[in-house]
Image 1 (cartoon, helix red, strand yellow):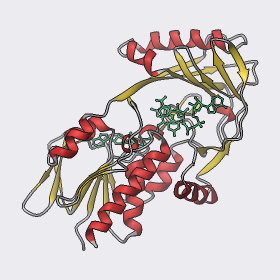
Image 2 (spheres, rainbow, N blue to C red):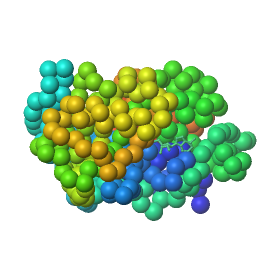
Image 3 (tube, rainbow, N blue to C red):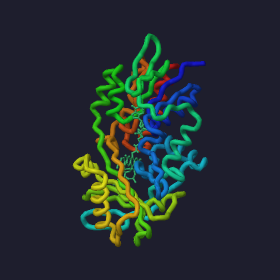
Image 4 (cartoon, rainbow, N blue to C red):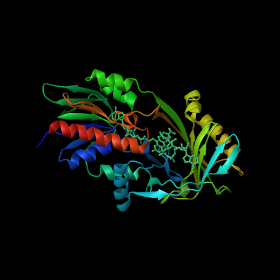
Length: 328
Ligand code: FAD
Ligand code: NAI
C-alpha cells in the first residue's frame, strides 16, 4: 500500500483536491475539526428545517467548474435556484431580476460536500495543531495530543489564518498565508409562523447593516414551513459588532430586516445567530494554490483565488495538479 496524502479541511477546496488526487490514483485521508464536512458551505439542522448559514448559492464562470457542476446536477447533488431577486440601497427596495444561473446543494447546501466526500476516509472532530516532518514522512498532531501519519504529502485546505499556523514547516508559504486578512460575517436565521407578505426571495443589500437576505423555502428541495429566512450582516457591521451577544445580533438584524423588507414583520418564532470569523478574504488573489514541492507541503482555499465557492474548488484542483505534476 502507498503512503497516503493528508488533507486538512473538508470544505470545497480540500474536497476538490481530494477528488482530483483520487482520480489520479492516489490515496488520501481527511482531517476535519468540525463534526461534519462542508466548512463555509455547511448547513445547520434546526427546528425549522435545514438552514444554509454560510454560502447561499454559487455561480460557475470558469469552464472547468461549470463542467463539474453539470456532473453534480446530473447526479442530483445541486439544482439551479431562481429566486425573485431584489436589491436594496439608500434609495429603497426594487426588483432586480437577472439572467445569472445560481446553484445550490439539494436538499441543503451541505449535500454537495457530503457527496464529494463519499466514502473517503476522514477523521471528524479532529483539529490539527501541528504539521511536522520526520526523516522521510509527514505527521500531524491534533488538539488532543494524538499524532497521525505517516503521510507522503500534506495539503492544508483551511482559511488563511489557520493555514498560516499549520505551514510553520514552510516559512515562506506561512508568511504568504499570514498576510491574508479575512473578513467576518454574522449570519442570522429567523422563522415566522405565517409566511411574510412579500414576493421577495433574495435581496442584495447596500448601505445597511445587512448585506444579503434569502428566503429558505424558495430554494429547491427545502422545507417551506414555517417561513424561514437567512440574513447576512455586512463585513463592516460584523467587524464593529464582533463580540455582541447573539440575542442582540438577532434583535439588531431583525430590526433592520423589518425596516427594509416592505411588509409587516412580526416577532420570529425561531431565531439563531452564527458568527463566521473567517468568512471571506479581504480581496481576491491569483496564487491558485501555494506549493513547496520539494517538501511536499501545499495550501489551498478560496483565499488563494476568488473568495467564492468556485474559487475554492479551482484552488483545490490547482493544489492537486501541482502535487501530481511534481510526482511525474
Ligand atoms: P472552508 O469552507 O472554510 O473549509 C475549511 C475547512 O477546514 C473547514 O471545514 C474547517 O472546519 C476546517 N479546518 C480549519 N482549521 C482546521 C484544523 N486546524 N484542523 C482540521 N480542520 C480544520 N461563496 C459563494 O460562492 N457564494 C455565496 O453566496 C457565498 N456566501 C457566503 C456567505 C457566508 C456567510 C460565508 C461565510 C461564505 C460565503 N461564501 C460564498 C464563500 C464560500 O463559502 C467560501 O469561499 C468557500 O466555501 C470556502 O471553501 P474552503 O474550502 O476554501 O474553506
Ligand atoms: P453574483 O454574481 O450573484 O453576485 C456578485 C455580486 O454582484 C453581488 O454581491 C451583488 O453585489 C451583485 N449582483 C449580482 N446580481 C445582482 C442583481 N440581480 N441585483 C443587484 N446586484 C447584483 O454571485 P458571485 O459572483 O458568485 O458572488 C457570490 C456571492 O457570495 C456574492 O453575493 C458575495 O457577496 C457572496 N459572498 C458572501 C460572503 C460573506 O461573507 N457574506 C463571502 C463570500 C461571498
